[in-house]
Every structure is written in structure tokens, then in C-alpha cells.
Image (cartoon, rainbow, N blue to C red; front, side, top):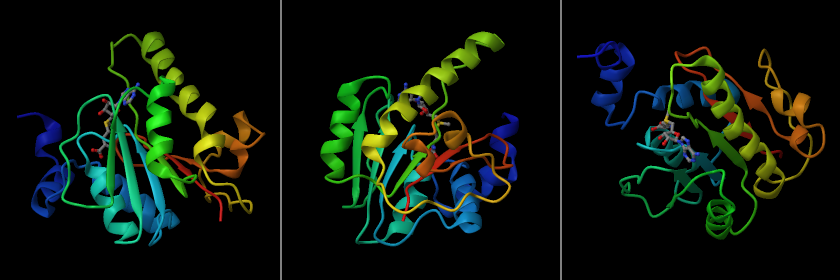
Length: 188
Ligand SMILES: C[S@@+](CC[C@H](N)C(=O)[O-])C[C@H]1O[C@@H](n2cnc3c(N)ncnc32)[C@H](O)[C@@H]1O
């Protein structure tokens, strides 16, 4: 049994019926920063096996919708408000499918994308960076535009720093949990 399987978040997730311990990363982010609201339209990138999808669906409620995207096929969850897209975020066809499901720009874009690790630091950083770039390029198209979003206190705003035009209206956050999820929040 691996360390991950034994840890407290893993056991809590199993007991609560979450598909992944990472569900608690998003729950904690949401409690702290109020990212998700009832009725929101949310995109979840790198969504397999579905821990974040479960938390997002609970948060948006019956009038919201969540679109999950991953290279790996995700077992459907029993929610009429979930749409799943199988595909690579580096492919435009994936984004076309996301946009079709959205119908309008999303209120929140979540990303927990993680590349397959090679163990070679430069290679892994390049792969991560390729995913981040692919997402940032699409954000102006998929994320709702509105009033300036308040910065997340204590959270580096990489989006604003790297992409002053358009993307600066979102927020790119990190948590202190074991791995670092990426969250971009639409503006309200
Ligand atoms: C850490 S897992 C996500 C866990 C998920 N947030 C949850 O709570 O269940 C990272 C996911 O990113 C996906 N991924 C990696 N590269 C991708 C790509 N280019 N396009 C789409 N998904 C990708 C992987 O298949 C993997 O399922």
C-alpha cells in the first residue's frame, strides 16, 4: 500500500464517497476563496477520476453546470448537470467541444492538469508549462468577462503577471495542500 493510499485525506475521501482525495483541495480552496457559487457554469480541466467534479457539482447545485475534460475517459457521475469531454487540452477540437457544452463563457475555470512525469526535471517542467500555456491561450474565449476580480489574498496571481491582456481578469491560485492545483476564477 502506498503512502497516498494510507493518508488521512485518502481515507476521508473514501468515507465521503469522493473519487479522489484531491476533492479536499478544491473544497479547501472554495471555503477560503468562495470560488464556486450556486448556478455557476464551471469548466474542470484534468478532471479524471472526478473528485473535483463531485465538489464542483455540489457547489453549483441544480441550476449550475460543470464541464469536465480529460485525456482519460471519466466514468459518468449521476448528475444531469455534468458534461464530459474526452480530449487533450492542447487540441483545438477539445476546446470546440467544451465551448459547445458551455453555450456561454464559463464563470469559473478550474485546472488540476498534471502531465505524466518522467522524473527528469527539465522535461517535466516543459510538459507542465505546455499545459499551462494551452489553457492560458484559451481563457479569453472560455472565461466570462466582467468586473475586475479581487486578487486572492496571499496567492500569487500568475495569470495577471504573465498575461496582462484579457487573462488578468481571472485569478490563478495555488494551495498549500500536497500538490498544487490551479484555479482560474471568472470575473463577476
Ligand atoms: C491530478 S489528475 C486530476 C485529478 C482530478 N482533479 C480529481 O479531482 O479527480 C490530473 C489529470 O490531468 C490529466 N491530463 C494531463 N494532461 C492532459 C492533457 N493534455 N489534456 C487533458 N487532460 C490531461 C490527466 O489525464 C489526469 O487525469
